[in-house]
Length: 128
Image (cartoon, rainbow, N blue to C red; front, side, top):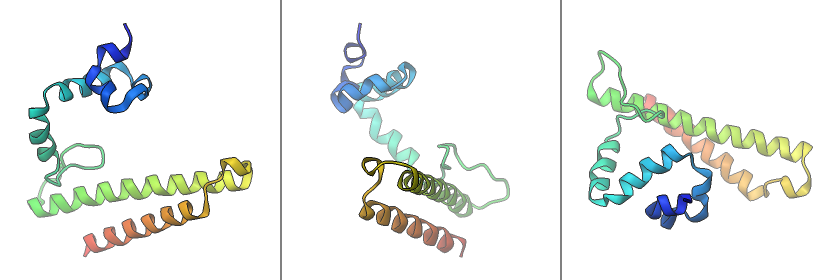
């Protein structure tokens, strides 16, 4: 039995990319997709701003709810900034060591740099 048959909703969503997902993740996603009425409340509950970059609620004693949201926002922002820096590092390594086909176009690198700058500025604004 193929994954496409076992997870029809997920296959409609991502196509043959489903083969790249571990079975336990595909199963969890399929469960959510099979009951779409549960999807919106779950998403809204996760979007209250209190989840850290790891998807866990911010746990810090002695903080007000607003401070917990700010701390969680900083966690997510720094995780995004870290991901962008890793992509830029990989792009630089490809530029130096890779072939022409492995290099990112200059406008993509510029976009990554601008995104990193915006995330850093957002984090600074959050700090006050």
